[in-house]
Length: 439
Image 1 (cartoon, helix red, strand yellow):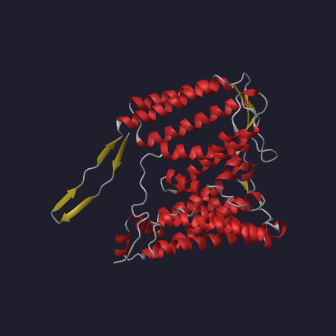
Image 2: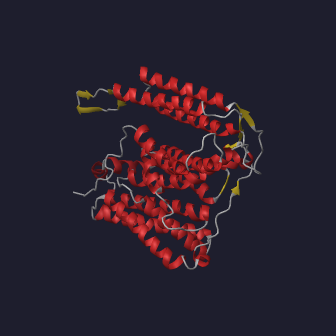
Image 3: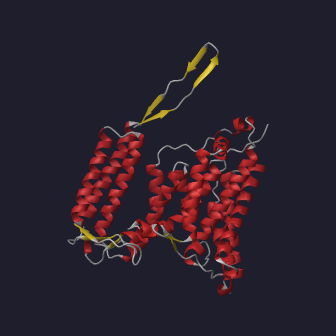
């Protein structure tokens, strides 16, 4: 694999031009072989662990969400044979990586392909007992719901870290947002709860901004402190306000699904994408706006400049500190909405520490996605799928019984392997975490 480092041609005098060469950095043989060996091992596990232990029945796949949209017929495939075939394909890709290595972009798509092949093989394996069909659409629908707070949390991280401020406090901002959404959603309406969640998240973002930008506090330590503060205060307020009066303070109405005409009737994807609640639709808008504005607007250009080289941005007349304040507070608002997705967008009540590390998983999605909105979206969907699969497997009769403790670890194991094994070398914005003091 090779990576090209872009350079510029710099004019140093009217009659003299100095051109910098493009330097090609190749992946070391050790790393190439290690990645290929890992892919081969995964392929062998697919063949030996899944293929040999699979039952004799064909696997039935159901792509429909019950009672919604145009229904498509169920279909069956030989699960045992699928495990063997898909495992062989994975092994071949691993051997190709060991032999010559894929390019940077190619390896990314190879990794995605390997993951998809293994997931399909695993689902085929679970259905070989013949006792149930694999509800693919329901699994994907649950994936989207579980990924929504992760996606919003990752977008919060994009806003902050593209501006040069590390936001480790996503967890705390989500926790406060979940609490505010449940409390004000109960006292008034779910819309008021959503607004309150965004406001309280913004206030947490303001705390992060003031201490990190004005007082130059170490941003990572500050984020950890804010998370501890959120955990302690929401726990205290839960005991003081909600525990003994859940009916009056902790029973908000949740947003119901809204079906978009025509689009909601498209087979398979219609019920999945266009029959969702308001927070999911809001997530679509937030991801699109951030992705579009970062690349195609003056605000986006200035944000990226502040995150990469604040001194140069200041020289060009950009108010570095003011822009950082705005973006960090806005990021806190988005994280607050992510917290509301856990209460008024899902279960309808608040519990102590109900985020359970999802803010940190959102931060991992940001890193896995290489600090880009689209990459963070894909990574968050991957982690959401791991959580949804864990829930689905706990309800299915698999050919080999899987311990519930292992299933509970699945989302976190997926996070660790993805960030440690698949990300490789990534570069955060150059000024990320670096305080700026105007000279």
